Image (tube, rainbow, N blue to C red; front, side, top):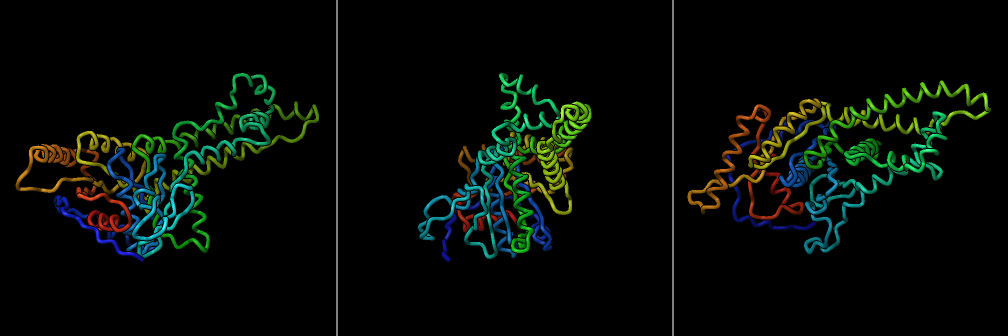
Length: 369
């Protein structure tokens, strides 16, 4: 073990607020916390500090990043040589569970590799050198049609993951990890923290399960109708049984998306925590995010307002103007119909970079109380 003395010269001291951490840490049943918001507001630091706080309070914890632009490794300082540890910390970017050294209880971290997820998606859509689209159309007796449309490269087009699917695959893979962790040797994890992508990606992710559920349902019904119409013709020519591989893949994807939806909407085990900063633009985006979360029936209780300036009796002109802007933004939150109902936690601006477990523990003790 190692000790790092974190010197903090000054800490912002906004109005005293509490996050209700006692409620968050209570109980041994598994709970999921998803932190999201506008890009650049400090979601990763807040998620990582929450994970460290859980681990230090006796909860074996897993923190998962679904942001295509990962910074979880940087936050835990597990992507470079540490002169304090005198060893090379294991990088998180490999898409596998990695232990984080320092907390009192087990803490593991995982960064979903979006490029690897794309490759796996394409592999799952391919078979014997052909595309998943052709397999599916073959199953409906329309393989010749695909061959005739080959010059249009329809298969390549449809085998390309649509926008927003990267994170859906990431969450699906996280669910697989969660299911794997529920096996006897890994069922000790009682807190799962998700560091999600910026607002736009997250909103697409939230709407994707319903979209795919409806779309895949229609496709499977269409396949059933066409298959029944073509089965007599195929039997007349002595062809074999219809292949169902593509249908099974679609059905599995549909089941995964349903699990994603259930995970998001479970009020007993899941909570989405919005992270923002005290600027008019960030608060406005957070308001829209909460409105969208409500439409998707995603439970939200807390709003973290990060990087709040400290009070001061003597301000430079820049600090005075900055504080005035922040005060206006915080006033917007208090009067916003979407945000005023949430428990608002003001997280302070500190004069050190929050990087590494000791710094995250320091931040967590300030924010999560």
